[in-house]
Image (cartoon, rainbow, N blue to C red; front, side):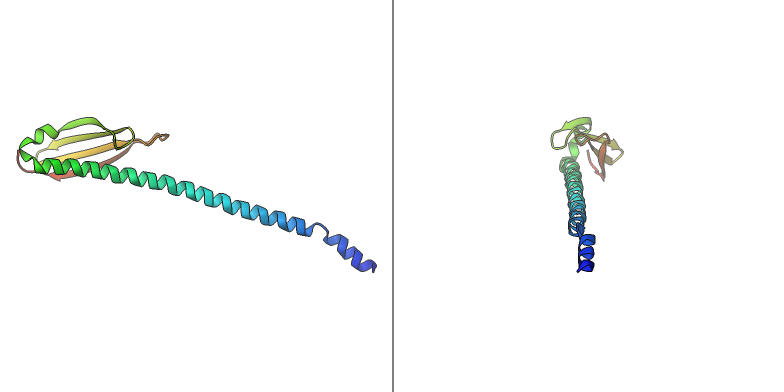
Length: 124
């Protein structure tokens, strides 16, 4: 009888310790998932900005292709664009090549993002 009571007293608290370790492991998993979700949201926002910049630049090139007689009117430097945060558009010419550069800066970031496309447009 005494032997079973010694084993019983040696095992007291083991279930509580196992439960605390299980809660700790579960909590770390939840925190990892929350961090992953935050990274995915940031990457999705960055991707949307890049898509918007590409669309804006391609739209400008399309306008220039459709109006080759007035290409000089499309040249600009750091024109603000509302579709992107702190966005600007620059259109430059080098011979028959036209370069459209879109710059933007996401809120809370210090890095400047840009998207550049080059098209050859004859005419004008």
